Each structure stands twice: as structure tokens, then as C-alpha cells.
Image (cartoon, helix red, strand yellow):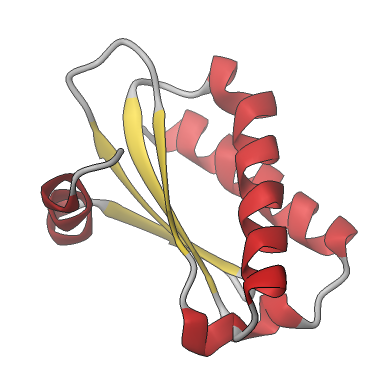
Length: 105
């Protein structure tokens, strides 16, 4: 997803999946593949280094799991708790979300 209108549509009509580390909004798309959008707030993570770390983690997790996802648009937002969490916990959280999306969408 690249267009602001696409993000707004997912935010307005999407189904929410959330835990302590991430909030995901999911909406079916017209494509034949899933698409990822990232919304990592500066006020949550501060430095570009911290934001980019979370973005890389989310992109890699999506890349590894996209083959099992239905054709949906997914926006990933990180929560405050993700700032101090170990990478293994963040990976496990995203894996859990991908499985939930596969089962419920």
C-alpha cells in the first residue's frame, strides 16, 4: 500500500488484531496477493534507528508469511511496549497475528 487513501480505507473499515506489541488492521483487497502498510509513529519510537528496526522486523515477518495470507491489506502499528521488547517476543507476536488473519479472514 502506498496511497494515503488506501491507509484511510483500511483504518475506517478494517478488522483489528491487537496485543501488547502491535495493532494490525486488515481489510480484503481486490488484488490476488496480500499487501503490507507500516505506520510506525515517531512519538512511539523516537529515533529513526528504532523505527527502522521495527519496520525491518515487520517486513521480514510479512515476507516469510505472505504465502499463507489471503488477499488483504494489512497495516501494522507498533505500540509503546514494543520499544523495550526483545526481538524474539516481537517476532512471536507477529507470527501469532499472521496465523489469526489466516484463520479469520
